[in-house]
Image (cartoon, rainbow, N blue to C red; front, side):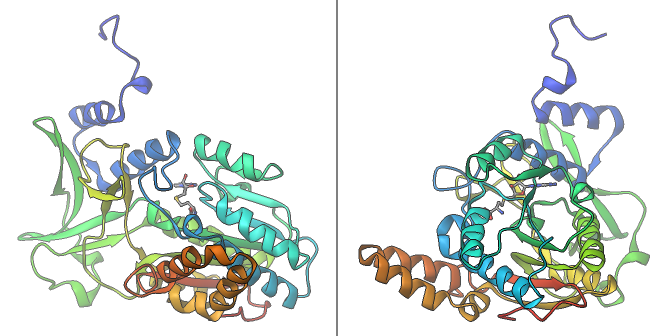
Length: 356
Ligand code: SAH
């Protein structure tokens, strides 16, 4: 019997609620822990910018969104300027990327309706101040079913939940989250999963971790199927890797610093590196052409960040230092230039995109 003054479950802090679930039914999967933590985290704050927990490329400089918009407008125009095309963004944050991209697209006479796939009510509110004509969607199912989709996803897939499988003395097992002595702790449990481990990794050293992201795969599949059916393309930019590898890439960030992944669930941003090879396979399997991934630095340089920086400096010479520093931050390999990658998934009857 709950005590009369006990809060209903929905109002309890997430940590208490997850501890209750584990006490009642045993450890939960890492994917469930990450999904619940991030859903709470994004639903309750705007985490972006210097005052927040982390900063993203469109928040560093308007050039990022503008160049992404010009890239989309160029592709749209070479596809015959279809009048029923839609702009779609997955996880649009503050709406900065969309605002910059749409302004650049307007200059290229491309003014599509705007569709934002966003679950956070706080961020939807922020997006609405910049993009009052947008329509919001909880997931991809709800997007228009006719007309080409021109999609951008920047730092979206890294926020989606991952599974981890770890090699222990008795084989490969799923990483679960237990609650012991007041703290959340990763453990391995469940049946051995050795049969599901790629041949090349089966004998990896004890302690090795393999990550997968079923949530990312199912969103990528839905996205690829829509583009195959309706036309268009998706530009995916994120940090990540290619190929089959082992490694624990899960991290928590708070106030621009690494933080404890398992402390205060829902109060820190949990992310993992994106497996571009998996996204690529999903694209090919749906019949799309896949371009890249290439490094963000190379991609931005190929679509003209040099010329764009020079033009902005010419228009506002007092901003020279700031613009050059933003360009360097986005492109230099010791900054975001090499870890971040860009990949395009393009409908089979659409032209090849620029800059890949
Ligand atoms: N693209 C933005 C923000 C990146 S942060 C930028 O570059 O600045 C991640 C974004 O994805 C946030 O807007 C967050 O609310 C959203 N998000 C996270 N998980 C989501 C999910 N499952 N469905 C839809 N949006 C999600």
